Every structure is written in structure tokens, then in C-alpha cells.
Length: 184
Image (cartoon, rainbow, N blue to C red; front, side, top):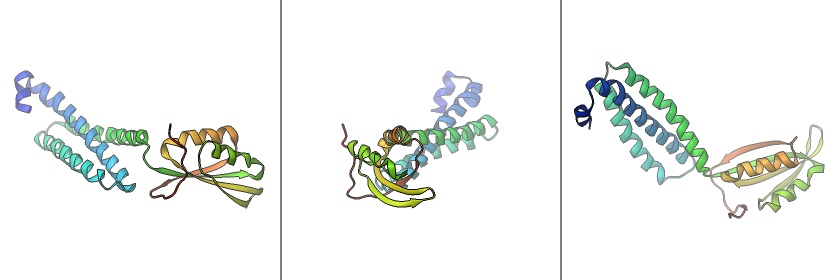
């Protein structure tokens, strides 16, 4: 491929523009795949992680070969590092958009906000209520398990119906027998 490019472009353009751009793009792709592979592995997606790993390493090998073939070109080093940074960003962005997996949201409310539980259930989410005692008196703790894609919808509901509420969100790896909102 590089020899074919040399017929069209001068060595300057190949060495100082095209090769660094190819290294950058390769790095963005391989690090994005790495980020996704690690996330899929942590979520127990055993079938897709090795496939991503194969392509990640293949692309990495192609990129590192170009680094070693151009050791005197500092722009290649810059492209490698910048590609790594952008690959992390892109991998996390893609994973966020895929919204794979489930979350547990724990919400602690004053006892007088019990109608919030009804609102969650109306929306189709399961809600387990635990009565307790907080620093300022009686409270209820609501635990709901949701699909990640529904995260913003639940947070918006919390902010609308109980804006001064404490809540925490945890990632869940495995679940069984959950009540999820129906998909439209």
C-alpha cells in the first residue's frame, strides 16, 4: 500500500502527512476496540470480547510496524499518542451510546414522598421499598433495577418529583427475574 502511494505522492507527503494520519486512525480504532473489549469482558459478554481483541491486536501490529519503519519521524510518535487519547474517548462514547447492561438505582427519600414509588411503577419499573431511619428522621429507600438505556428517564423522574433526593447508581453484571419497563 505504501509503495502504491509513493507513485502518487512525494516522499515528503507520505512520510510527514499520510503515515502519521494512518497511524493516528489505526490507534483510534485499536484503542476504541480495546476499551469496548474491556467493557464487554467486565459485563460478561464472552463471545464478542475475543473477536474485538483479535481486530484490536491486528490493527495495533499494523500501526506499530509503521512506527518502527519511521523511527526518525517525531510526527509518527505524536500521531500514536494522540490516537491513543482519541481512541479512549471514542471507545467510551460508543459504549455510552450502546447502553448495554443493567443498573441499580438506590434512592433515599423522606417518608412523605411515598407517591414517588407509584410514579416509578406507573412507568413500568420495579421498585422495592425499604423503611429506615436517616439522620433527619424516617426515610424510605427505593431500590430499582433498570436497563442502562433507561437511566436518563429515571434520573429525570427523580429530578422532577423529588429534586432534593439522594440517589446512587451502580453497574450490575448479572441479574435474574427483573421487572423492566416495556419497550415501545
